[in-house]
Length: 132
Image (tube, rainbow, N blue to C red; front, side, top):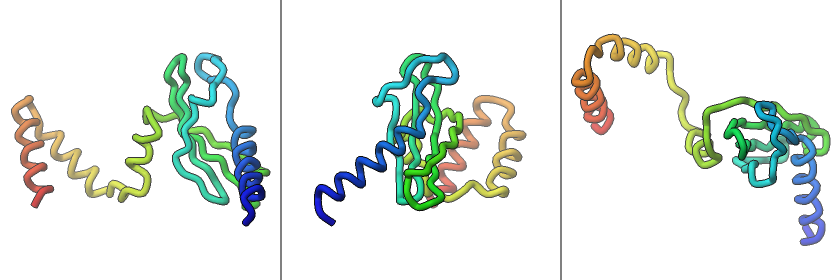
């Protein structure tokens, strides 16, 4: 693909993503700046972005979807999250999901904790077990 054609395609995708993004914070009403957005990952069908309001620090993950294979007909799905940066989101993407058994085991373990010493002992035991 010729460089100018490739550049135009990239510009078109960026413009489509930009047009699907919110213009103002839904929490405080502040206008978003370009620096409030971070691209986490993208492909031909979607783009995942992290957005943090510079005024109130409200964070969102925004998935821009394109059912037609181009981002020209895109829609956004905002998800309010406590992930504070794009780097933090990238850390979890693609990791194995937590199983139901993991949750139940954590619940049983937490019910046994009655003091700070119990917590420390449990954390040390789980560190030793997971490193074997």
